Length: 419
Image 1 (tube, rainbow, N blue to C red):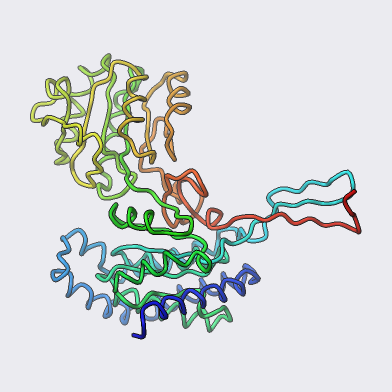
Image 2: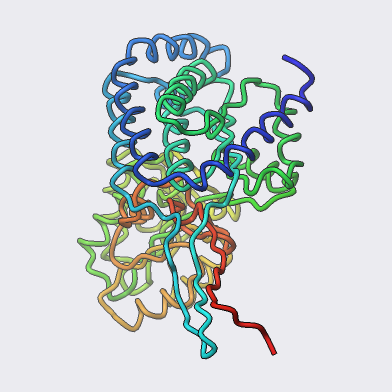
């Protein structure tokens, strides 16, 4: 490969040129590309699996765990799922050109707020090759060119998917550089891209905390991100305890390695004696290790002592921290101190308690009487997502097509001049 700085500049300039062309493409042409790409994935399933096997064979060399290797693996069923996901994006409304608001002025000027693409997205992610197709689909559908930088452990899989997507872009008359994959595993390439604020409009990192911290520290353009998913379930004194147990187990155990899984639960003192023994038994039957304060340990045999750090930890594993609180105010204070502004839930039949929790917990998603696992673009009815943001600017919560756009004002007149 040629000089790394020249290579990254060329990729970014190609993306910028492609983004200008893509901004004018109609929705049906983008949907045609999505449908053709889905068909190509089905047609080339054997070749994609063969490329993936090269990555799987190197998994031990990269020190991947069994769970990480499984996330990396492509199977016929998973490829069928990737193809179906692309087709599902075609059903989502094209956000580009949407008139968000219009305001006729007394002088006859019509002022409109119109949705437009962000431009060029630099998307950095780890492991799962399905993200290559998902990110490309969402970015192109929303009118953005995307530079994809996957992890070295998925290089062969990502390259195979990228080459397929590039060929279908050309076949459907879209700019071939609307989707590009960084083909070097040199980590220094990321640093070069993060300096190119004049060519790249936004960076989206999706991976471990160290990756996201690096991107946030080095980026010269806006970053859409979340650092941790320290999500809470608070069982209020007015909770339906059957419901609370069901929600807690789902929030923690349905998938432990995702950012919207519960990592901590809080129990009001008035229901601790009724709730904690049954909750402890239910969690331990799922092999969950519980780390709690003195009152937790007195009612859950086998629970370990929670440290200060436990309450700040995103385990992404079969572990959970727990605490008894004396009031809803203490629960909110605990979440404010130890949470990560990602997803927090209250279980209660008291409307005023629910409203207080919703108003005072400052998280991207606050959920009443349901699992934290619902903080997801598809589950919220937003369609596919490129990630979940805990930022307040530019996007917050699940980031789908609309969150990959901005807006501009367009004013239509018939000769007006300002006095």
